[in-house]
Image 1 (cartoon, rainbow, N blue to C red):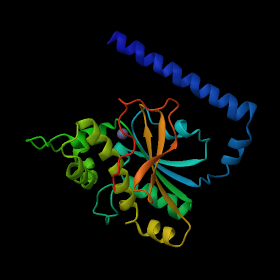
Image 2 (cartoon, helix red, strand yellow; image 1 turned 90 degrees about the vertical axis):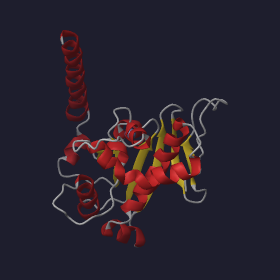
Image 3 (cartoon, helix red, strand yellow; image 1 turned 135 degrees about the vertical axis):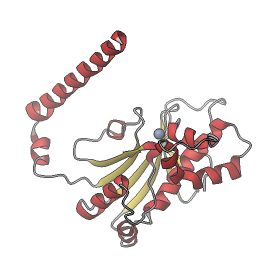
Image 4 (cartoon, rainbow, N blue to C red; image 1 turned 180 degrees about the vertical axis):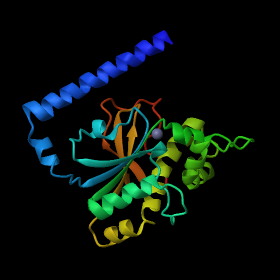
Length: 238
Ligand SMILES: [Zn+2]
């Protein structure tokens, strides 16, 4: 307890001084941006990312306040559009707000390597059902990605399977996005584009799904050339 407490205290000090730096910059040295943002937000991008602490979207892509409207979910999943059944549809509400109110021009789904949600999905189902296992229930959204991964890479290592599934799951979420009427209409009318991105944490690389090649290709390559031991970064997922 004392050790944990000290560590937590350290975190809080770090966060408070982080806010002080933010305050000094945006309310002291250079207040123009925050002055403007007080009038309202006009982000042109909805970014759907994972809750993973290593993949903070704004930090990763150097976004300024006001640049991106963000929804973070476990494994950056987008559920299919389904009628209100009395449940709570957090992601669907974020998509609705981004499209109807903010009229964003693009949606980026940002997946990543070593995703804990996908790892859980790829594990065998436990024999005993647990009503409080929200992760497993949530990850059911990505079940089609798991099925296609096992069909094509059934004999591959768990590491390769997880990587393939992480990427397939982005495509599954892109498909689910198109089940929302405002998304489908906006894409059809040419007001909206949708993108699947994948951050390779180990390689330090940013990949994007290319419909033409049916695979994720580097948009920003790794600094070091891939060694032979490096996992394949170009796996055809579609
Ligand atoms: Zn994740």
